[in-house]
Length: 64
Image (cartoon, rainbow, N blue to C red):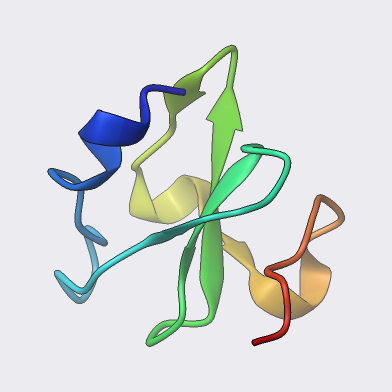
């Protein structure tokens, strides 16, 4: 995924910032606790496609 694009994207639900997950397989909205999947380097930014963080089976954000 183009990392420069990340700066332009916002959560479609709350309009908050997103965090690219380590394997670049999803974009995390921490405020909504959902992950928007990235498929074939294209982020799927549809609210109905968002996966609740507790059900996400891909990579997780690194602990600070």
